Image (tube, protein in one colour):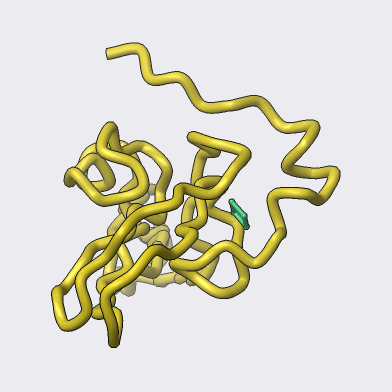
Amino acid sequence: MNTLLAKVEYKWIILTLKQSRATTTTACKAQVSTLPPEPVIPSKKPFKVDLLGGKRYSWCSCGHSKNQPFCDGSHKSKAQGLSPLRFIPEKDGPVWLCGCKHTNTPPYCDGTHKQDFIASASLHQDID
Ligand code: FES
């Protein structure tokens, strides 16, 4: 029996191949999970940042970036399946970007960080 794990467009596919002893046919069982990896929590508070309207930004959605709240590419090695959210604000000005990575209105804070599951969670601390 061979097991193959592959990532295809943000979905993890686990293929299990079985070779029948009685025949030469091969059975293939596939399981598709649409659940991406969970982000870690780098901060339990939002980040207030001044953004420029019309400029493109990449908000870290995995929580591993050392350039919070923006992406530094860490997801490629530490959170495969998660990717940054790219956005362009309409106008210049300060905004509150989510630091807990669990907002329902990414990249902006919606107050989710005040909920118990964030308050009781451990902060992620990178040990590279
Ligand atoms: S910091 Fe994530 S919802 Fe406020």
